[in-house]
Length: 307
Image 1 (cartoon, rainbow, N blue to C red):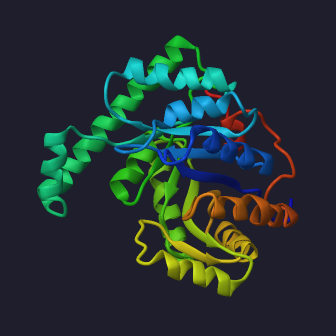
Image 2 (image 1 turned 180 degrees about the horizontal axis):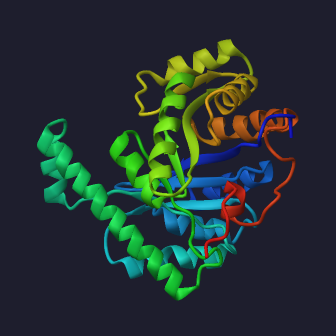
């Protein structure tokens, strides 16, 4: 690794797009593994394919990359624990879960009506508190059952504000944050670290970044213009793979990010640009290892084996 610079963790965000054949999805995951990415996450929901089933399919066709489906915090803790322990077993210790805080339809509609009000803030806080209790019971099931090779598959939570930061500090192993610049990254990192320290814990902090990539700046700008209006909770990088490597290196070195989850705006084009061009540049700079150095998702994230 480059002297004075720790290696970073790099993940890829995909979706369960029903227009994409499952075999094509698996090929993308295999391509990401060939590049040495630490993990891939999959979003699902209405109109999308099931993330756990897609990644179970990918588990049989890969050997090293971490596999992180979405896990809405609903149902029974025992069933939730079994679902992800099964993926961990099938994948040989490469499973994780991105818990999504979920409410029933009535509560969800009520929160939407009251969002931004003191009453809404209380409801959101209660929702996250219940989720933290639920995940605690899931962890107890993992400890009791012992099926999952990693002990506890790591939890990677997405957070935008203090309440979800606090949830991550209590229950997650890594937190995905959405800064728009180095200063914002530093502020969020400091808040997350303080909340985790209050719980007697430490977290891996991974920054989110949407990407539109092309061999030249002008071509990237052209691709961006063709997208039309683009809104997201995370920053958008438009440029070359080398420019993306510059951004990641800066946010890693100066902002304190332990790593990143890249959201390709166009699939498969931006996935290919990432793994074929940006990743080799990061390896050349010593920011990523040449080959996998560990075999489990916990290992890729730099986490200890759960006891």
